[in-house]
Image (tube, rainbow, N blue to C red; front, side):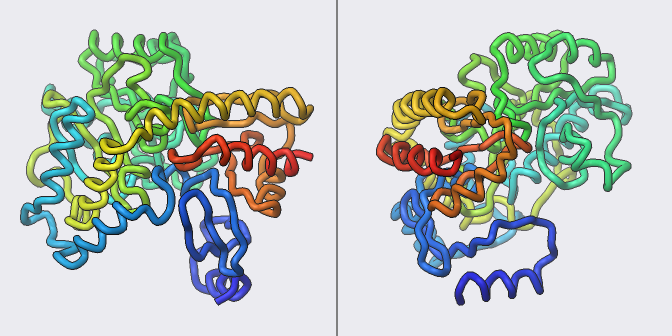
Length: 393
């Protein structure tokens, strides 16, 4: 099936909730993707920060094939070894105490919000608790996750959402303090805002939020779905700030292509009880096998060192782009999570990049978002910059 045939079939059958680019991806190899017509693309979006180790990684593929021959799914009525192993490894890596596996990042946020509300309910038996989220944040599109997503555009058609959510200014500690009261049960934020425009938190903000939570017995939730799992040069983005959450959500690169997410909690915050929460597929043997293979790769390779080294080079090249093009006013981000700030529609550049064999995406109307596989080399950066220059021209 060629690209035209695939697009026509999809458009006649699939609910139109995405404005897709006119590409039909057929296969991937390393940091490259190939469409149904055989065209090759350098991939600097990695399935939106999913494919940390690139496409066709043999260790991940072999682990999944081996698990398929054993069993894919059993339900959570029973234990399974891959999930037990992945759970133990992840909580040790994160310095947390408990974990719940989900199928996606959105579901991880749902579980985190429910955990915070259950924690507060257990303290006083009341159901009128509040959560403070950040403006311009993005946590997902289900009703609970949407309720803590600070973007009116996503929320408006689906109101009323869950109540008791207030929105503060990101990186503005006074804005947060003004919203705290005796009903506040949690504060949720992304250490690096992704969809909102690639905004890293400041150290002052992160440490100030932690102090507020400690002083008021409020749970701190970090959404590390996009910025976690090595993307910023640390395993988790909050490690840059020396601040630890009470609840953390993960997904995307956690399974490197296999749909899996998780929320992790400290023992103090592990408030959910039997019957409070559940999932049919979450943490099944197949998904957990993917998590274990991904954790093996983080342990056995120097990928974090690579992120640090290559991202430094990448940022210098983006500095040159900023100097050379009037339509570029700068860039921001951490590690291999970078946003190029334009004074023109970013999607125009995305389309030109596709035409020249490069895949990048947007983060808002004028931010070009770059989330390459963590295994990219300086040579890949050079190739990307060469194409980006053509697209910007």
